[in-house]
Length: 160
Image (cartoon, rainbow, N blue to C red; front, side, top):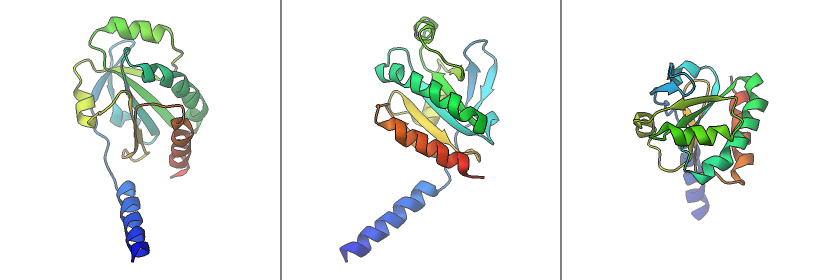
């Protein structure tokens, strides 16, 4: 009986995790020059959307990982958008001056995009498949998360 319940639970869990959850298409601005940026513009690529702020310690730890991950997977159709949520630009400027970030940096000081994504922690990251569906959500950032995130990216990149 317990074995059947466990099997049923696993079937429901995997079905729920495979269901489509369309990523919100919020409007952002490119941090460097303020030009408009839409997340939907990255459809067709596996996209990692990371919400961060300059005062967030785990955000500081995540940036080197994001830089190396972007460099490795970009040639395979991977994009990364780091969305800054600081209300004042000075903090973000100081933060970014210490980072090597070749990936897209966006800003949303009004906080519309994190509301649409229901951001619950800092940083919060959303891994979106080529069809524009959120497939994985990561709250916070810990050293032990790296292998799991990389495996998820590789799996999504292998999908058509």
